[in-house]
Image 1: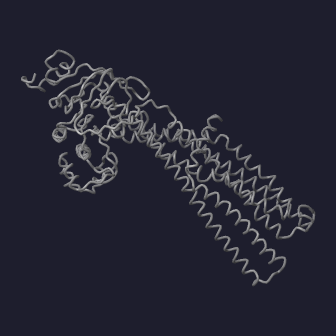
Image 2: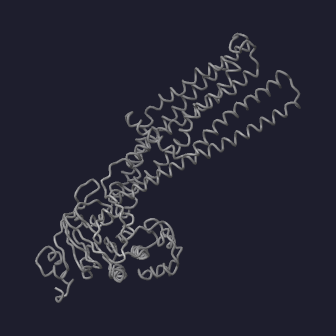
Image 3: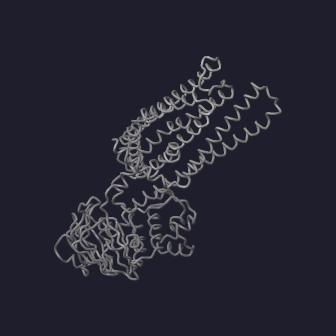
Length: 590
């Protein structure tokens, strides 16, 4: 990572630091108060020992001093506790904001964009990489200010009692940040390489885990295990590289801090032996002076050492921010959202003229197309895999950009508010996404419904036996574990029915089902689609008996459009396609 990129990322990180207010202000105030209490604690302890050893004061006179010292220790502990709490809350607020920003951007770009990378990569971005910003905001950034405040307070306390000790502290202080910078020069690049290795490992592992049955079927488990092993080894090497730098930095800083403290101890030792006679403003160096300065010396370097210990947090944050900022700043050529809202009280007509559907990178996926979906009609899209059928649904859902015209009830789709438009749709795909939770949770998805509404939706979806056998609180795992494919699809259909809509988009809703479950889903769907403008993507030709219109798409082009029976009477690609199912239509229909 070049210096220019590091400077840009550091500026980006600091810009987000303002989101941590007012907790960040609490951290600075607590740091200053803690520094003042530390000086008072050292003063009281040095006075106590001076009275006890030099003046041989009676023990009874020392109890008030001991009580005050104990109170100072308790106060400093309370201030330190609140400082940690405030630092954590500041970092948490910033992380929450960035996660919301990332999720909003992912939602805006849609599944067509997200499918370009494995799901594990996105999980790593949202979880590990955002999490690795915590120490930068909670520890490193506040410490850059506190490493000035506390040493300055200590210098102000030390110079009036001994200027020589103050000069030693002042002269040796720059050594620690200097060597901290030297040892941390390559840490940002090491962390960035570590994140890249983690992203690859996450993507490999999650995808292979999901595809384990397929891998076993084709006896490819050992080969993929070797791939994951190589990715794991790469991640281990990158992690050890980061740890080596962190330990080297800490060791160097501790060494120079120890040398500086030893230098002060030597000065006071020779002063007590009367070999050095300067620094005490003309008076003799007392035990109080030596104890007071030596008690403060470790804490003078402590903020700088802590900054060095947290310096790897800066490098870690730079590596994480590189991925986050790159994603958020990446140019996006997706569909634009207008401001117009369209509330559908009845089924609309959908019309396309010279329609070209584009990829997020601007490549033409489909078109140009001209077709009309009559209000209240059921239209099927057929064609081979990769022909562009799902791309048309992506454009209608507002996930893919387009050129030309695509109107809903006479209103151009690009002029509609996308979020409001999606709320007007009912969508059902071939792989239902059920969340980890109960049956009720999967039906409601955060909304509030009464049991009667839920039971009615299950009944209309033909899924009442699922409720009867499993109950409302039946746990459903990730990937719809605990349910059959047919049961999962019927629950997804019931969930869709809870949100009535005038436009239905069905992306092969029965592709993963056997004939029995397919018949049950279609029987449940048929009454729900009456009077609705519906678009069905299917590979199963026998389902065309139920539709009003067919769109045959091949290689992104519309080859045929019309009623199935009428198209079947004409020689052409649709008739050739239907030759695969000669008993689909009766002679009268043909």
